[in-house]
Image (cartoon, rainbow over all chains, first blue to last red; front, side, top):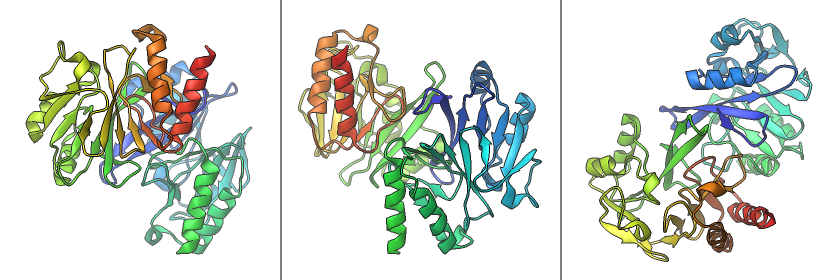
Length: 202
Length: 202
């Protein structure tokens, strides 16, 4: 796995040929149990790396299109899976817990329930006030800039804008770890503000 | 290949298990012939993508440890290979041209010859005044920050600092595309200045 912007955060990635961008997953190393977010399949090397860092006790899936290899990794690590409360009725995999808006999933990791995305109640996560981790709604197609999912995929553009505005209103966000496309490691709040401004012009 | 921060720049990457970071290569799409920098092996998908964007007419190798798949890709594309003049006598692959300090390799792409790195005359490239592309000396081990090759690998730390200072003195650099580790897409000059300050404290 790759070191991210903090010593306790790691990531692994997979190039997607259809979209010509990388998909990303995140590991947060915590004394009371490591957390994985939207985990892609792990290579043998990365699985060994994960085990050397203490395995995983919780897997957070942001939305039903980001289950990826969560079930399999839960079996390998013994981690519990948690998913978005908004999809509880039709989620494709079993979850041990359903996460609602403003819920503290583990200490220091707050869920923001997004509206208007392609799935109901997609989760974005704020880690210790400074790192935003996004699933599908907020992403990057041009390196260094954030974008939204294409409008055609959104269930409600106005609600998506409202959810974006809520995140852009968090001044202490320095890093945005996107699930899809290049992450923004510095000046994350500025990148969110720029995206919001660009969307408001449409 | 992945879109970088400009519509005419693409990259492809390979995770390195030994160092737990990605190696990167760059494609610059140009009307008068595309340029590749330190090209890693291309997947079939990326080779087709490259061909759809016009193939390649020049391959620039920054140093002898970054030859990677240059020879093979030169055969596939018909591109000429150019390498650092400082290594002309012992370069591991044939080059069609040797690049010296301040040379304009193709219009808009200027070579900076670095001193004190692990190989003589390692090249860094400045693309249209705003994008710095580095080989080995300047890299990233923690996302969002630049670092130098470990001192033990450098041939001369003081000369390496002098080369770094020269690049940090280019105010218009916004992006640093590292050969090894996470790129810095925005505020590249600030990242170079921070690295220089951190080095001066040692």
